[in-house]
Image 1 (spheres, helix red, strand yellow):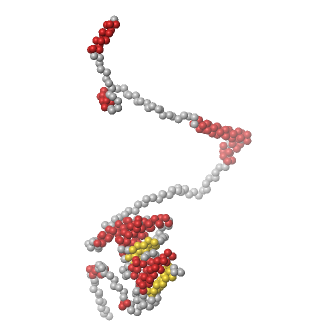
Image 2 (image 1 turned 45 degrees about the horizontal axis):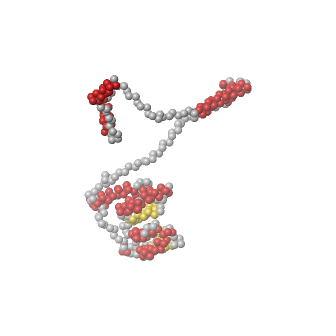
Image 3 (image 1 turned 180 degrees about the vertical axis):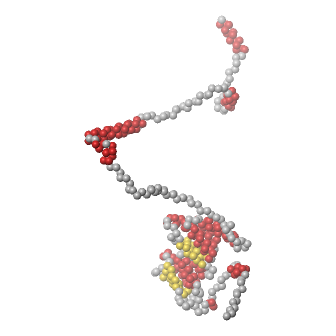
Length: 369
């Protein structure tokens, strides 16, 4: 039998790359009644619980919730006694994914997300992610500090994360609710998980800022960005102390030698054969020697209190100048410095006796003679 095999024409690499690339500004076409005119076969429903403090807000915005889900033909009911919200499909529901969007909407409302933000989940290009962080840190105080680090001072860190990822982020209790595009949700989850693992969010925010700038350049869009991104090193601040290694003794099949008893020691020294009086005398002599040593130690300690401490001299002893030649230049400089001082007058040098004074003295001596 002759079988004819028809080979499919191979697509070029250019065609495949064109198929894989998504053009800018392209949107998924909306799902309409014409795509599913017969509706759904079975009824699907989802229910979620909400905390007591959300009851007042849900009552207030409930007409808006019913209207938003009514456009998708989704039935929603609020049970205040049980504290739950239930969504279910109807016969008019044509979009099979609408029930999942409605389920996410009631989950976000239960996690303290305002209705104005939560209603965005009904759009096709918006998704949500509820990250559970309650069990990631054991210590409660440490958990609160890391959660506050994610929010930042006056919510600045959270605001920066929202601007970089185009997502709405809500930190409430033990969960972090994020709402936005899929790429942004991926980055938000990474930042939240790293923050709870004691990695500061500023590092991830810095990386996101660089990525945002690189994505604006059409030439760098298809290239690897590893060379542009910063590389942070992890530092171990507190090193773990190395445990002490226990020396393992060599194994010996023989048991350890039995310790000598008091009788064995007396037999070895010969004291066992002495008389009781001699033993008593020897024991008393040892006690007296110990008492004498203790008495001398006590006496020395008492005498320490009577030993006077070494006192420092009141006047410092002047250093005796070493014998040598007199430095005349240094003496002259000292005299000049003494003259220039403000306090005190300069020293008066006595004048030599004149001829008139000598003549007067001579006359006096002659008169006396």
